[in-house]
Length: 367
Image (cartoon, rainbow, N blue to C red):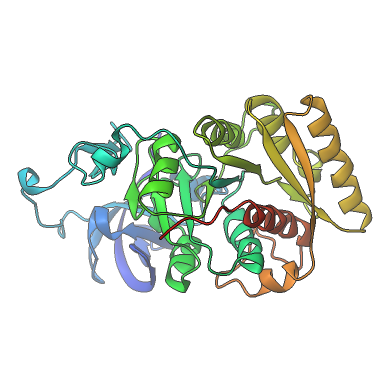
């Protein structure tokens, strides 16, 4: 179900990428924070009457905290001649907000011929992570060892669908830490659009010419507290895609020293299931070399995970010297489940270790 509310924009609060945060006054007199995507609803002035989706906000969900502007009836974007627009790839298909984009792999794309028979990543390291919050930490670890690395991010549709929602992607791109964001599946709004993770990875290798690619869902993820009911199972599927296409899969572990939920304390069951059960091809599993008790416990958990796969997963210990400084130099805020680097240091160091290991796997390519 959707909870509809009518409101009036009273303030433009902030902007990033193609997103605008507004203050909007409901008919009740209450004011809510509302996000509008310029590509969908235009750039709205104060006083504009808007229709909001407030479902997650009113339910108090983790993906809430704000309403979403669905339409501004009196300020509709100007119509375009669709016959003059390249592309026919529809994302968020058959929803009321479906949007049409030019897919890099479709026939209208200038890259179609290059990708039509493409089938090999040429050994490109592919770091796979469960949470979007791992992205800047992985890149920080990469840059600590290889500061000029070209990095692409393949954003899957397990979390947010619009890439513009992510302040992290915007900040990493603006700072030069990220070469391109490629949105796949139902996700949209990246620098490049692709049909699925496979063509997203091939695009990263052949079009972006990335040295390393990171694959993770967008901000927000779904979990139910059951063994299989979480959106992060897609991490295992991404490992499979990277392996099948001749990449070097690196499985970044989801770890926490501060999560109060036993299933996520230490090594998260999400990683155990995604990499131990969903992934079917060989992959490296980096763990930080640390002396703290919990870090040693995570090491033993990761070792047990790798042993359970009969050698398919390979445990790799990674030296952490300089990684914390690298994390603190990140151009974007580090936050996982509302916790920063000082609150959940092991989470970010583990992701950075995956990045550092990926840097060691890079094969120089001609430019």
